[in-house]
Amino acid sequence: MTEQKLKPLKRCPFCGDNALIYEKYDYGSHVWYYVECLNCYCRTDTFHTDVEAIRTWNKRCGNEVAE
Image (cartoon, rainbow, N blue to C red; front, side, top):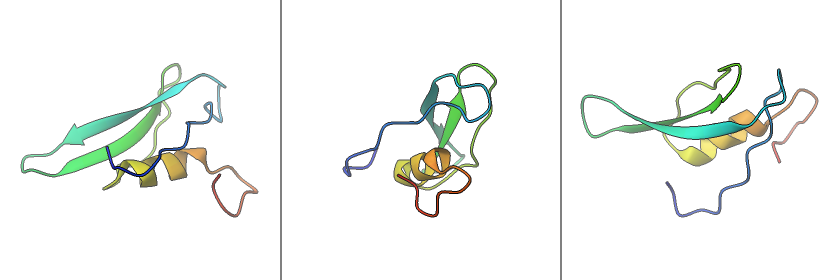
């Protein structure tokens, strides 16, 4: 994970359950991050940093800037 302070994950926008951030490795040395709900398995796309994945997950309709 990056050294930046990570914001806590919001609950799933669909079912309200908790979510986790995951690391995914490809064939090379690249690491990808995504967030996925533990209940309904809703998830983000993959991102190059954990900060981007969390920012995307935490962004909600009507919020211009993710908290």
